[in-house]
Length: 436
Image 1 (tube, rainbow, N blue to C red):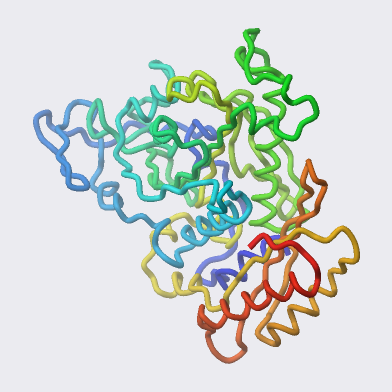
Image 2: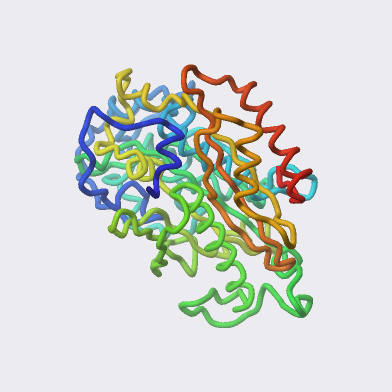
């Protein structure tokens, strides 16, 4: 089954409720997917009063529309609560990026920010992202405002400009976001997003490409459906290729190999060209994320004029509802132990990645070696990713190994000892090049 890897990871079959018959396209802010407008029904605060939130006082005005219900949810940070289903999804994505993308000194290429304050300025939430002053996404009916200048972020993209301006060129942002919306089993005024950004210099983008020194990132031309007016076609195509390859590998990591994927052209205010990624899951096409080539005006304004990049954003609830068969979004806020205990990991899952030798590699030799080292503590081994390097044409395999004792819970120390022994053995006996 396509979702078996994550289902095993959480050991989670949701018995309190039946499987959802349909997952809506909601829970991605208009910047990463459109959502229906909400009625303006929140109670207005009297001008001159203040609201206390996360240790700061905010004066209220005619734009203030926070409800008591929403205020009680601020600071819960479900995505940082260990073994919560949203935390599990975040950790799987973070683990994938840490292992697959490594910098020059062996450290993770992508930095992760999952504790940024949800209170942002309207400039951060809209203007920094090139969202026009008259854009409908700014309406009070769609957002939660503390006052005319501060609000609860409507998307994690509100932090994009600040992180770029700080000099970062590869990062993930995870957090709770807030949107006034319709009421049903798929919508809630608070949900959680994960967003990624990566920038490339000319050298980074064209390295290893034949005649790459003659290629350029920028030109002055006309905007078209395929590119922005400041980008060369070559640069856009390379960025788009890297973006789609990155996302294809990510969903294979989450859902398993053999997933049918399609890309749908769309519009977002701060990317062009822009795409929605859809997967065929259990015979139904589902949108899972939005992405695109970053608007150069945004990148330039943050001080990275010599770089070009991509960005994507996805909803954690949406992925969790698909992967764990959770039919009602309210369950993510449940404190019922019968629901939450299903996601406490009783088995241990470790990945092992390596470059294959040029010849004489047999997958069954690897399986035999795993069984020799791990014995009956190994429940299952899945090949979750294959990758051919575009320059060297070397092939990389990534296997997910599930460890589980038949009678007791394994300790992390036990599993770490076995897994390290396996890493040493696979290099010595199979002649592979480790990516540990």
